[in-house]
Length: 341
Image 1: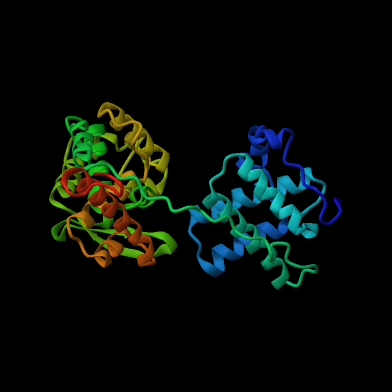
Image 2: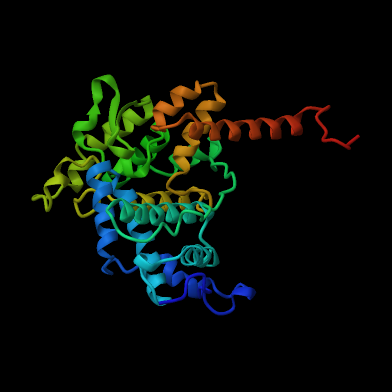
């Protein structure tokens, strides 16, 4: 075991910034078959059963804990004997690998949760994370497309065949409702309330919300569900029971995945000349930003997007205010910056 308070190895060349590739061995956690400690597995089970944490959250925590335990093992220790220096060493390795402060903060939350779980279960020792400060992420404003860019993206998606109808409905739904990609791929046929133009969305933590469908989104979904749309991709025999109810199917007749939707967005964005600007969350950001810019109440946008706290939604008001300031400074003859004549 390494002595408490000893130096923790994050790869050669750290002072020269050459540790990125070396440190990523711990930060990536790419080996899905790699076993976790019994404590880590019990902690993740506890989160799932007792707290109902979302599947995506559990997967992220699993990756974080896998990287942490791999780092400890390569430095000759384990979670039972981890020290504050070990925890800080892992966070330093993540930073050297280029991980964002928010990613490192989430990793620390997973690590801290596991160590506190150990103590509550009667394990000896202390909490090595007690005095470790979480990385402070800087304020990152969501990047939204301009309204004409969204229109260009939609115009790049025809609806003349089954795949195009599906892709058009995907883009219209993501922009029209602001739902997350994970929420979109979880939609079933029974979640649509066509007469009321509503869709039931299962959000984070298993929370349901009803989201209205705009005219364009409703028409796109209707076109996808008409003959020549979804039926063309449906197989003669369903491979999995859950696929039969899926709203969106891939070319093999299975429920679309988040990666599949991301592939759709990349392909359609490239056709519209927007490849560098489009990512899975950009249509969600654009929906919120454009609604607030047009005068929507912030509480309505919070409910639409399924934010637990209005503080999250307030980030979008900052986006619209920044845009307002830029337009004002460019257009008003007396809006010169300080020092300008």
